[in-house]
Structures are given as structure tokens and as C-alpha cells.
Image (cartoon, rainbow, N blue to C red; front, side):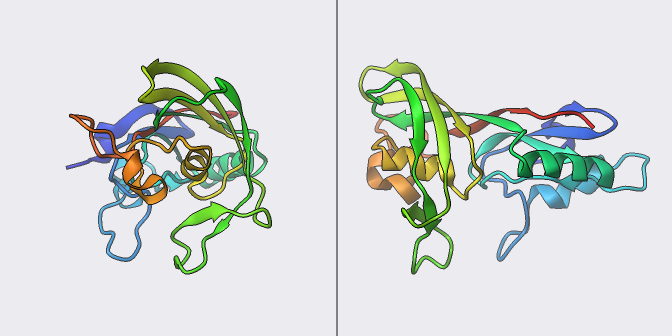
Length: 202
């Protein structure tokens, strides 16, 4: 069972960084009873202020999640994310190996009609979405380890972009279909990890 304390990888007077577990939602919703937001009271300590979420990770994405300790810190961090001065770096395993070792994906995204807003797709009339990628390592021609940097913050951006260039993230059946699952003993979970967040400290 996940506890907030067991996920803490950094803590100071303004911020907490959690290493979020895959499969744990950031916020509650329909049929979602266990989530990070519901665990934050345990990190309150001796202060009267409950820590606050300042951004989200998809339920199936693991890794660094920034939490603010105060309203002032939350406003500071929220501004950094809104102004795109916060820099997020993700690691992912993708199916196949991109021919171009590093580059930028610039494909606008919109909610896919008929999906109830649950799924995104490439749409030239959608919102601008840009992702920088770099191949770190490869396993033959079957898969590659890539570093991803979202330059914009659209829903499911990294997942849609990698699938759109023919290299879906391993385990992402939603956007990569059956072809996103590797055979053998490779886990069927989504292989996407929030590796690093760089943001100015309040």
C-alpha cells in the first residue's frame, strides 16, 4: 500500500518531491478512491497548512511529482509551469528505434471526438504541442530508451507524439494498440517515468 512518506525523495520548507508509483492517480475522480491528493495530509507535519498539488502526472506514469508546502509556494510553482520556465524531463521505452536520434515533434493536439475527452489525437486545428526527444540507448531494433522533454503541457502529449511518429511508448495500449506491448517478460505497464523537474525555488 502506498504511503506519502514512502514516496518522498526531497523535502524542504517550500517543496516536497514525491517519486509517484505507477498506477496511483494524482487526483481523485469517478471510481478513484486512492490518489496522491488524498495522501498529502500525512505530509503536513506540525504546520496548519496542508500541502498542495501544483501539477499532475498520468495515473500510469511514475516518477517526480512536485508538491507545494504553502499557498505562496503553490502560486510560485504554478506560475513557473504556466510560463513554461519549469523544465520537465521524462524517460521512456519506445517500440522500435527512431531513425533520427534526436529532434523535436511539433504536432498540434485536440480531444478525440467520441472519446468523452478521455483520448487525444493529432489535429492541425488543435492546440500547439511540442516535444523534444533524444535516443539514449537501444536494444537492437526492437526498442529504444529515450529522453523526452515536453515544451508544452497538453494532455497525454508524450504518449500521442511518440505514437504519431511510429514509436509508441511500451505498454501504452491506449495510443499504440497491441503493437505497444513487447513479448517475453517485459511488463505490460506503461514505461514512462518523470525523471526530473527543474524549477526556480521560491
